[in-house]
Length: 212
Image 1: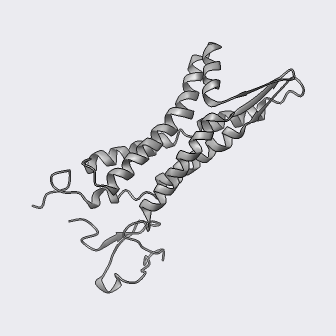
Image 2: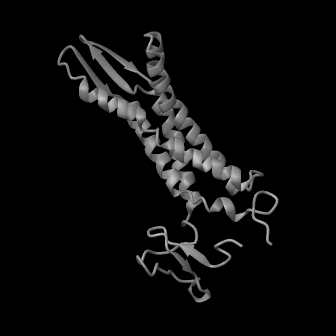
Image 3: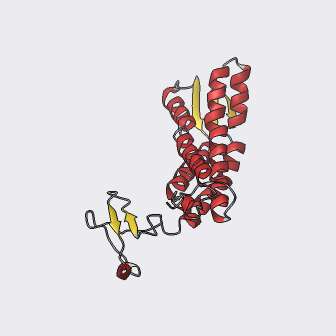
């Protein structure tokens, strides 16, 4: 038996477990401890997560095609996209830094978008993935999301430090704004997804609990 079947709801704010009585099912109820409105599932969770994920996918294109930094050294300017910056770092012999930038700026956002898309499709169309597999995928999305801001942190640090007048300047490009949008949208997408939807269609054959 699930909590929903037992008419139990956990408060999203204070995590108190509340019981939903039959006469309350048609009206808005609030937590008796913190008075927050209770929901058995996040309202329109799939629709919101889809909207945020698709927005991230759209922003991912300009984030990788437009310059993310503009560097001017002795009056000579150079604009780099994420990939061209990775290649330039690799050619300069800074392989570890190039690897960090590639993982943080390309691999992590791509894997997060791919994971969100697979998770949404598997829940909405009831794919054959078990609830355990979906839960692992959701945890992976949350884990890799914490590294999404690394590249923006590097750019912000460089912009703040490299202020040498006419000798050298560095500015964030259009791609940096788009990349920041990707990071923020994927963070909101992961937050708007209700992981309890993973278990709504669980059965004894695909990872659900058996009745004793």
